[in-house]
Length: 539
Image: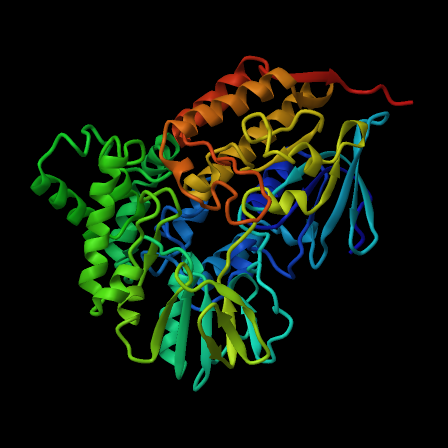
């Protein structure tokens, strides 16, 4: 297929954001090219094929709402969808709306330069192609730039190595092998029980323990599927108005104004329900007051002690260095119980730091471990990594990476001063990773689509955040973030997992609903905080 070298819009990424953005722009009559590094759609759910990979938002909520026909036709099978099912869903959407014809697969965008004289972007790929476009929309995902641990010897190990974010398509059989997993964030928590079921010996290297809740995953019953489909429109409206994109009963009390028995009963109910937000959102001050937070944290630590038979191992697995919720909590299936198995060993890197990889395995400050395979569950350069990995240059050839050298700066997490007609879907300083991503994706895509339509209908050529609006938004995001406990944790929310990365709270905690209302109000008031300029007259 021959693709145009000059289009109205270029979209980078064919995950859920890129697919929906393509669909919306097509409906509006914009010529569009999508570039995707993988050979298929799905984004995060294309790459993350590690054993146990599963979403932590319930399937019937973690799905598109833009097409009532789509949500009625598709049948989810489990409460929490596994990666293969989510990928099948993404592929179904791509086929249903014939998206593939405008997506160029196995192609990475390497650079994008703004031509001020022509008010257009020149986008270059690793295949050498350059595309000329008016609008550049980054749908690169918040968790797509993977990272390895910063230790020596990564290329010395003679056995097999794997990263959870780049898992072999055919899977890996660890039967009979001595395996190490480095990292106990979400991918580690999900993969460790399955790897343990295969390996002859599994050693887990943990730097910081996670708070993990029992997922209580199960097959969906047809009756509950039918009930949700009957009320989907109301549910979608509630999602959009909620704090995290997942409707829950709003908290009305402080955790400190009720009795211990009442608190425990509430936490137990949340635990039994197997949802992330129920414990964190159970009281008004869990994320704002350390004493209130500790009541929830200790409840979960008690659950860890109940699930792990060795008290010393249970204590090592119990987080005490940060408030619950300020690092991404996990949902698991038999994670803690895995450590009760005699062939599973836990190494506390806080006590015996990782020195590096050797030819035969892993070395700590006190011991060495001979291994056949090492799995890196070491996460991502989150929020900004996929954006700064591309050489994006705006006015005056200023690089986005340079502008963000002290932390990301944007207006609404959507647009960046000095970079006209550039949009970041679920970009830093928007709710993004603190929300149900599909809800935030749809909101951003629809806002961007409406903005592009507004420009075209009014003979306008560019839209760019003003410096004043950007400064104000950056200050607001920081102020709201500092009113919470999030900055007290060294997390990927703060960029703390990447050496040298500015320590900035990169998400907006003001709530999905209020943020949506603000974005809508800004657009309805002539795109307040944006400079809109007339389109250039054709020569």
